[in-house]
Image (cartoon, rainbow, N blue to C red; front, side):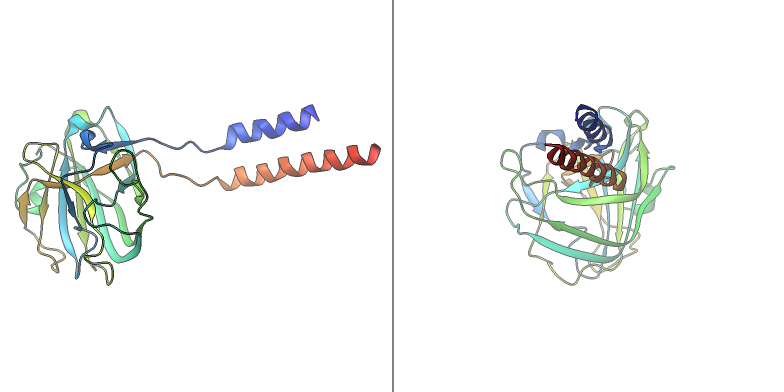
Length: 245
């Protein structure tokens, strides 16, 4: 029994995938909701082009970004699930900072601009409560290609070309955001209904985002198999013991 239990415990200890903590930008909004809500760039009709810059000072060190999360707003929110049929998302390192974006989308892109997601994207939220007066960061985008970001090299730019837009939930759910001049985020936004736009309007608004090194993972297949093996071994031992008794 000791050997079997020990083996089972070892399997559990060595194969449970780690859950990665994320960096919330702006840092000041980790447990405090923003002062506004916004549905761009996801819950739009006919597509839109969007850029948002995040100050390097908000990150504690180099990070390989594998997931970007958002949370429901405070003013307009509900549980939802929607699919964007066609979207392209890129990340890059840039010298331009918040409230300094050019009105030309291409001019803001960094030399290391990397497409991290391309294709159909389903996003959803259970609209659950988060810490303080916030909602949970459960609007998750698991990147197809992780991005190695070093804040010592510059600020982080998120570029989104929402090519298709969505056919539902437009205006029924908004995301948590801040609109403050001189803070750590700002955006450049095109006209709704105009995917592939080359220029837009720059302002101080920005979505509150969480950047994670890896998605919140379900148990790995190998872990499930080994857990099942451990349970089977314990069950077998108990049956044998019962028979002998």
